[in-house]
Amino acid sequence: MRWDKGEIDMIMNVKKINKDAVIPMFAHPTDSGFDLFTCEDITVLGGKKGIAKTGLIFEIPQGWGIQIKNKSGITVKGVPTTSGTNADITVFEGTVDMDYRGELGIMFKNEEDFEITIPKHTKLAQGVLRRVYNCTFVEVDEVNDTVRGEGGFGSTGTTINTK
Image 1 (tube, rainbow, N blue to C red):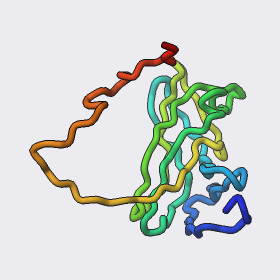
Image 2: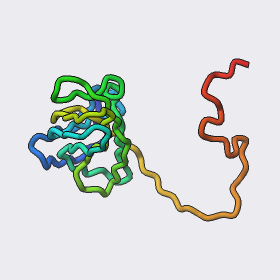
Image 3: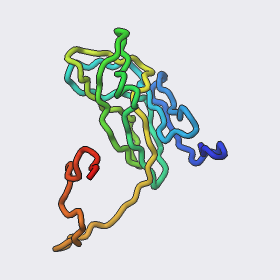
């Protein structure tokens, strides 16, 4: 929805392949990400990875893709579990291409050293719509020089420079 007029910018077809699937939603009209929910309980051993099913297949419009992102609340507070406590997990980012027609899954790792079960209907991740741009890659012998050059991976420091 457009935040200024409450108008819909795009229609996206979503097919439920599990009766317990939840159609994605934006919690607020100004959100950039829409909530993605689990459609069934998922149990993962400590330190292991899993893919949570959403029970949904998306028909992503031409020229668009979906980026799967973590939810800040789960990153800070942990994910709710069937035991009634929260557990630390890492939700991995992913890309859903416009022509993919399989079930959307949410990749994650159980950061605890014990088994956890995440209950169905848990708001586990968010999807962000992104324009897709294609290009042609051309092999060249040289690329132009810049001031930055090869500086990367923290080359600008980790604190503010007050000098």
